[in-house]
Amino acid sequence: MDQPPGSRPLTSNSRPLVHLFTDGACSGNPGPGGWAFILRHPASGKELECSGGERVSTNNQMELAAVIRGLEALKRRSQVELFTDSVYVGKGISEWLPKWKANDWRRKEGKKLVPIANETLWRKLDHLLAKHDVEYTRVAGHSGHEENDRVDQLAVAAYQKYL
Image 1 (spheres, rainbow, N blue to C red):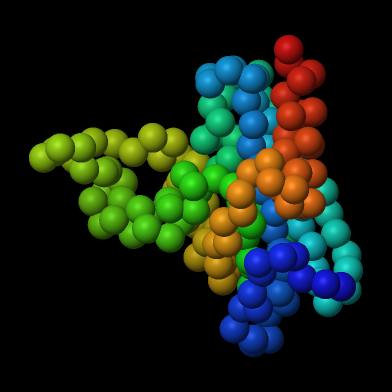
Image 2: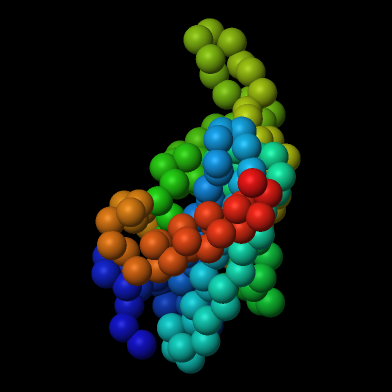
């Protein structure tokens, strides 16, 4: 199976390599929200699509939920290449998370530390990140990226039942 455009192989080891494509969406912010993921095992071609929604949520909460649900679907420790159009999730994983943890789950706002938004979800994601080797790859949303467009469709469909 071909790798998606812009992907790069992770460091090889005995852990399976999987691709995780995620998206979250909301109608209003807050409003009805949906999340979706595609989990793909390139070596076998096996794929899992999953989506769900909530009556009231925010876009960032749904973006996080998509990644959390995707990682929870893995049955064993894996190398994961995460493809998302969410800068919030990407920067959170690659830049902000270590600082938040060092500051007892708080972030700097001016000269003081304040609680981070969506702390419960970030803590859950942090726990899952410790179980897997995750590398973040940003994709541009609504740009013709096949899997990103698909998870967007699934996430939107998931919240529409609440409209």
